[in-house]
Length: 177
Image (tube, rainbow, N blue to C red; front, side):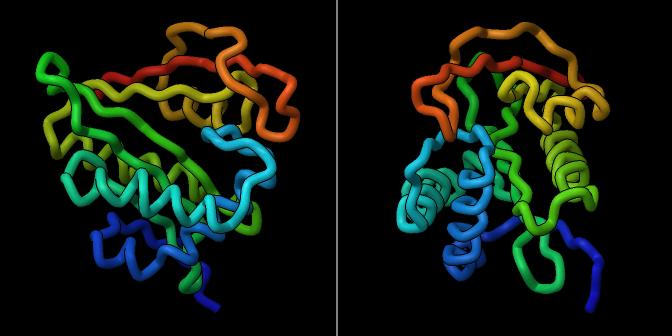
């Protein structure tokens, strides 16, 4: 089996074609505890709806790029580059929902996705990338290793994925490119 990871920017047609795989990946990631905006219980139908109702319209309006990592034909991860910024922020982009399917972790996929996102931001002549991540999450050290700097931590920012009574802090980060 080919173990080469391929990173692609998805077209609208590819997003439509791969909705089931994208939904399955999101469902698995959330059930594994990722803090990316969803809480349990979280169904596969809700996961698929996210891609069709939230991501697809932004890709169609060319306000967001969706990158996917493929490994052996399967979608192993994804990240979104939000670039539809206000008129006073044409130099900035946001990182949204970096995720790697639990079955494909520890293979450098998140780093490859972020590298593709950053390269695209550069080609778009953007000079600032911003993001937020749950404080202490697995992704935080990755972002730091990639050169992102912490602006600060906001306490009690979001509900915990698995424990709805608990509120988690978030770390705000940026990188100048």
